[in-house]
Structure formats: C-alpha cells, structure tokens
Image (cartoon, rainbow, N blue to C red):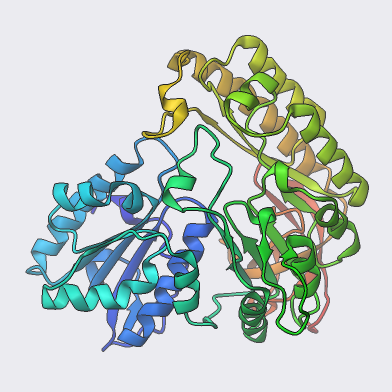
Length: 469
C-alpha cells in the first residue's frame, strides 16, 4: 500500500480495541483544530460501537479530516480517495468512506460528483451529525452532504466530557474567523468567530484533569479573540482569554496551559499580563505576523503594522522575559518586492524566534489575493523562502542551544524511540529526550539539558518531582 495513510490517525490508541467492535480509521491533516475535531469524532462514534484501528484496510469506517490551507490540498484528497475506492471494492463495498473538514466544506458537492465511492461529506461544523449521517447512509436515504455553519449547535451536541489520550490535550474554546485576511480560506470554511461558554470549557477541562491530563492547549482559529459567556453564577460580561486562563489555572492537576493560534489585533494587555502573573501559562507564544512589510500587511488585510507587532512582542517579553516566540510567514505574496522581503528579514532579526513556520504564497480559489496583480514568479518565491528559512533555522538552533546546561522542567509524554528512553515536552515546546522509566509518563521531572538540535533537546534526568524512582 502507498504510505499516504501512514500519518496521524486522530491520536487514537487501538491496543485495546475489542474484537467485536467496528473499526474506524481517521486520518488528520493540517492544524491542531483538526486534531481536536478528529478526537471529538471518536467521541461521537464510540456509542455506535466504533473503536480506533491503525490502518484503513481493517476499518469499517474511514474518515479523511482535511485541511484547505495549502495549495493542491483538494487533489491530494482525491489521490487518497482513489486508494480508498480500491480498498472499498476489495471489501465488496462494505467500507464506509467519509470526507470531513475544510476541503469537505469548500468542495463538498464536487467531491461527491468526482468520487462516487465517498459515502459522506461533512464540514468542520457538522461532525456531531456523524451518527445520523451513518444511519442515513446505511438505509440509503436522506442527504449525505452536511456543510451547515452552526458551531454552537455542534458544541451543544458533543459529549460534555471526553476520553483523554495521555497527559496533554487540546481543548477548543473558539472557532471561526472574522479577520478576512486576503490570502486565507478559513472564514469561508469555518465561519464567523464564536466562543464557547466558560462553564462548558471548565467542565471539559476538569474531566481531562481527572483523567491525568497535566497540560491543556486552548484552541481557536483566533483563540485570543475569545469572548465566551461568563460563569453562570457571576452575572458578568463575556470573559476574555486572559480571564479564562486564570480561571482554568485553578483546576487541580492542570499544571500547564498554552493557547494557539493568535492574531496580533487581539493581544490585549490583560492577556499579556497573564503570561507573567499565571504560573501555569507556559512561556511560549505563537503569534503569526506573515510579513514584515507594512505595504504587504495592508494588502493582506492584517490590520496592524510591523512596528505595532514589534511593540506587542516588547510588552510580552516585559511580562515574561523567558518567553519563546513563534510565528508564521508567507513569502511571495502578490506584489512583494525585494524591499518588502527585506523588511520581513529585518523583522525576524529584530524579534529572534524560537520556532517559525514559513511558506510560499499559494493562491486559494475564492480569496481576494488569488485575483491580485503582481503574482510573484515561483523561482523568486523559492529563493526568498530558502533565505528566510536559513535565518529562522539559525535562530531556532541558537535558542535550543541556549538551554544547554540548564535544568528544565519536562512533562513526560511517553517512551522515546530508543530502549530505556523517555520523551517529554519543555515549557518552550521543544521535544526532550532522556533516559528514564516509562512509569514517569504524566509526571513533570527536571532534566539537565546536555544537547540540542533543530527540533529537540536531549538531557539527563535530575530528579522526578512527584514519584520516587
């Protein structure tokens, strides 16, 4: 089989799958929101008798949870659907194939037309309807396409608690986007911004903590735009993300809190202050800027300047001097000149990032930027991307090497690749490898860092904080 299906399967552990259960294989593309959505699909499917399996060949139901951000995303989906069609034919048509996520939202009817083997298509705000849609498909009645925008209905319909899968967990608090950056499809595939009520989020977080989750990552397309209904007993106005973080930090067992992805326009002073006054808030901030050129930022409809972004970083570092900064960059946006690109390079030098993600601009159908004049030649994009990534790699390696010699608190997440090795996560998001027993999983231990690479740290166990070795 082509290894196109070797990716993430919703972080599902199939070791304890009952032999009599129906198998579900979920392949997840793209952002953390999609990972969270895949986990919640597992929750709504569990009462129907579905249990996770490790490969599509052994699955009764295969779900492709798709992402529409990058170029050619749709064609990649069709390629994998071709493989699934052949597998379905080998089962005599017994396999159910579903396409979910943002490609489903944007291309739903076309998917149904081009690939008749697909049984179900559902957008990111409709996966709570999976049980109903599966029932319809089994009876060959009703609509097999669901792309309605009703985020609140989705969250109301989902189970209020869920099964944890390890000591870290994603927790969705906000969905959708009202920013309408000219390069982005998210407002069209995820809908308008909507925040969950604080009480619902708290209930889910407490249930995760009760199962041993030590670190929660709050998710949203613009998570720092969060304005959720305040707790019922407070009779207060909607809470902001800073208020939510401080509230969740009071939950016993929750030792670490993160949030992603943010927008510079929504970094208010209270949230910035929370980075300094809430110990559970980890010293890491992913704040995409996309470009260092004011002219390009305006063309992107970002709503801020490069210097305004620099000022936010200054305030964040004043609140938390040890913070690791992360960002996203697009090179070759329509009309980008050499001077515009140099402005991006200068911004990178000024900020000094610990982690960054950079991409060549790719036109997304239906977005304003796709119709703009001044599309940049691919060879120019390639040259600029290589220069930017070289600088970002140098900064990332330097940040990681700055941790050598330090004793770092590491949340142990499981076994490493080598015998006797444990794997964990630093406060600054690096993977950390060290020799230690598997029994430490879920604990926070001190590790003295002895080595660093581009993407990870290595070290020696100093002491376990909560268990005796």
